Length: 430
Image (cartoon, rainbow, N blue to C red):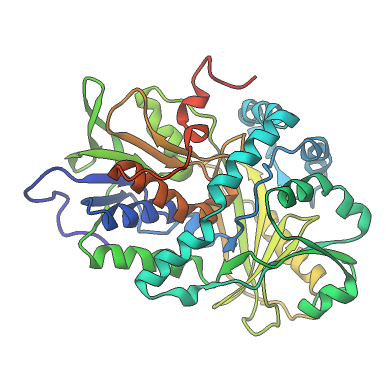
């Protein structure tokens, strides 16, 4: 999907959104609603990255950062387990080490509390924001609110996550512990290895994340927006102002530029002097069963960090965390593990022999908070990236926030905790 021209004829220069994933599309759509002329530019077609292959979970209660004290202590065991949810190839350890050190620092209790408070305010309107967009474009059937079910093998394993659940409850998430008899009434196909669960009845999911993103893209274009398939290689600037983006086809003049390039945002911004600790936590998915397999809502295998989500095209098992950067090839073992974990959790469901397989790049920062807002150093430069495991959940609310900030109709939302400048030398939290 693209415009027939990479220039916008007449009038003031448009706003350029760099990145056509779910976050970039929601930002562009919201700005268009405010009367802003917007061009989305991406080297690939819309929604080809994590927006295509994510677990589809709408998890607005996920205010606990990944860097919880318990997670930090349990991480070495996960890394040593060949079937565990975290994997770092030997050749990537040295490169991953600075990010991992920042991650451990972020797990201090005072940092965790500050992060959770910021994420709670940010994520609170996420469901409302998604529904607003889908209602406007006539696609509310893409979302369902049947809750999410988190499975644990026993009460001891559940107890290891007590700090996370207590934090989520404190910020308003309804979470009910269920014994096996109770959760089987919700998901009767779960196998005998899981004895206890936590049910979050208010959270939801998308039946097709790719179709969801494309519905927004189609509506954006239908209303006059432009999507260009061009690779942004740099920026045009005059003094301290960003005046355009540089592509292989030339320089495109811009009123402002918004970076929504996901895991590629860091390398794109290096030329401007921004060096943020953004790492790709590579995630995988496997389509493991038919749509009629009897799974009714996202079921999370908590010990494996795997989401099993019913979608219109089938059942998707998605998850794992792999540090491997943007260039290493996918690891076949991680895909096979997803299929194996699904078969262990749902032994009575016949798995697909040739289900589609995928790997994508989650843009993760060590404090689990995205970068949202404007630059203090470059006028006309804005950011919306680094949503980590919450890109789908946070995309619509990110669009609302940036559209409000840029159009001058500011809401009572403090986005200073999400500033890119929290990573500037001298401002980093020790």
